[in-house]
Length: 102
Image (tube, rainbow, N blue to C red; front, side, top):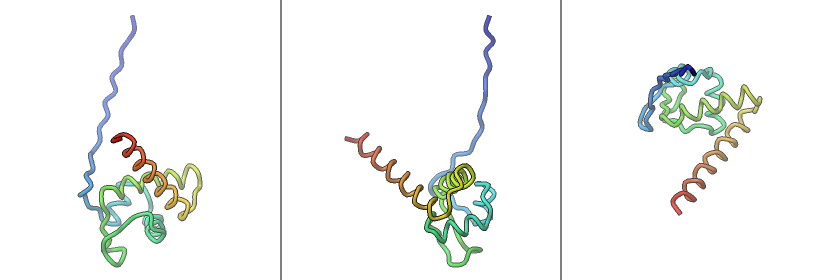
């Protein structure tokens, strides 16, 4: 007889209209504050607010921050490379959506 194993996953759905502060995005993504500040300076994320302590990030920034962190740690890609890679991934997603609708 084979034994069945059940694995349960738990997570939180982050909506586009969710909002994070810099420290909140650090906690949620696992990235350091200095990494996020550097990535913002390279255009990886759009932010609202002038100074870092007033920045507000959207839910999509969490997704991008997690990918950026993996690119930095797994492949040792620098900040400009991360910004470029994320833009290219966005373009691929956009093209796939257009193909699906066609």
